[in-house]
Image 1 (tube, helix red, strand yellow):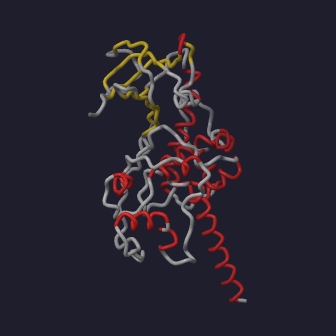
Image 2 (cartoon, rainbow, N blue to C red):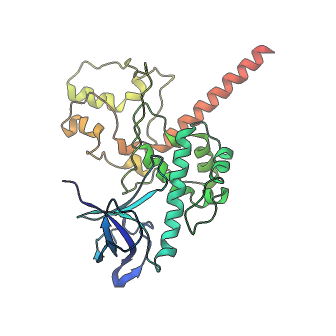
Image 3 (cartoon, rainbow, N blue to C red):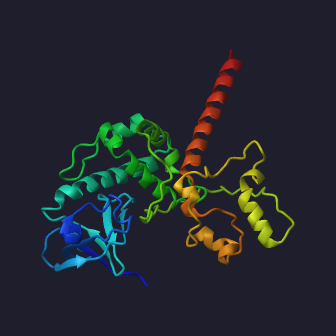
Length: 315
């Protein structure tokens, strides 16, 4: 059953002995129990006032926190979830504002950047910097700049990774956009860290007409179990010939080394989880960002070589 959803305003987050703390610093992932207090309001009431709210204290512990609102709305939505309910956060208490402002800054930056990347899949770093400089940041947050991108690069790229995990197989990954690849290099971002936060949903896209999946995969004439296992392991080599074969996993990052989740749509189709095995696709939560970036870099190199060859022919 779905958990009830509420708004929470004038909130404060803390751990034992009521010491204030940020909830995005990895404490939840380390199983440190974090609790919160504030005024609980109906989910449709997004006003920050206390009017109509019910005071609550020692709520929790927090299981996960998340960011939503990547669908063109004005604001990002930051929420926390407990075993009993989900809470969308409105306005922090006076004593918690200085802690929450940092999270709000990088969360709004993530929302802004993801929506810009969705609108322009060829965006360069220069375009991205120019774009965020025109954005009005949340209250109490400084104006966005190139320095802001570098400051929050790890967090930003992790949000993009999470967003990409919700992508369909025929959708381009935002992590392969030139601006993101440049940021990864300049800021020394580590890809493939495991995250316990729910992935932000992608808004539905209209599929282009006539776009079909390649069906040139060869089929092994063996038992269904061996066939599914064989094709899952060697799917890269069996699709598109040896020239187009590419590794889909680096097998070193935390995402690659994680087990199949067993809950996503592709896992449920796997024979080992009781499925039919027809889709022959990897776990959606184990999409390797390192290989996606490497493939994009190789595509750029190949394209540059083709352009160079054409120039030489013309001469």
